[in-house]
Image (cartoon, rainbow over all chains, first blue to last red; front, side):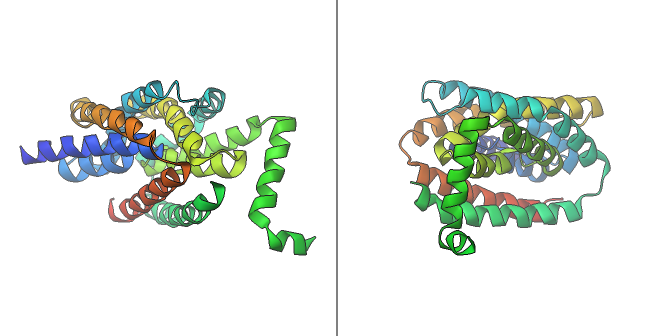
Length: 123
Length: 142
C-alpha cells in the first residue's frame, strides 16, 4: 500500500519535472516502476514511455498560447525520431547495456555542466 | 583566425549557426537531433528530452524556455513510437502506467503554471539539475 502511495507521489513529481525541464518524466517514472513497484528494467522503461505520452501531450496543450512550443521543430524531431526510437527500443530489449549506460551517464553530466555554465550568459 | 576563436568561441559559433539557419533552414539539424533523441530515449529509458533540450539550445540558438517547451511536444511523438515498439514486445504494464501517469497529469499542470514565473536561466538550471539526477540513475539502475 505504501508502495502504491509512493509511486503515485513519484508520478506527480515526474509530471512536475516534465513541465519544468522539458523531459518526459521518465527520470522519475523509471525508478518508481522498477524500484518501488518491482517491474524489470525493460518493463519499467516501456511502461514509463506509455505514462509519458499523456503527460507530454497535456503539458504541450497547456502551453499552446505561450509561444514557446515551436510546432514545426517539434514535429520534425518527433517524426524523424520514429526509426531510431523503434531501433533503440529493440536494442534496449535485447542488448546488455552496461557500457552504454556509463557512456550516456558521463555524456549527460558533461551536458549538465555546459548548460549550467552557459545559462547565465544566454540571458 | 585562431586568436578570434580563442576570444569568444561559444558566441561566434552560435551566431554563425543562427545566421546559417536563417538562410538555409534548419531541417537537417532537427533531423540530427531526432536521431540522437530517438536512440537515447529508447535505449537509456530516460527520455529524449535529455538530449533534445541542450541540442536545440546549441544548434538552433533558442533559449531554455523555448527548448524545454518544444522538447516536451517532440517527446509526445517519440514516446508513442517507443510504446508501439515495446507494446509489440509485451513489456508494457498498462495498470502501472496509469498508476504513475495519471498523478503525473496533476504534476505537469502545476509545473506548467510554475514555469510561467521562471526565467530561461532558472529553467536551464532546473534542467541541469534533472540531468544530474538522470546520470546518477543511469549508473545506479540496471
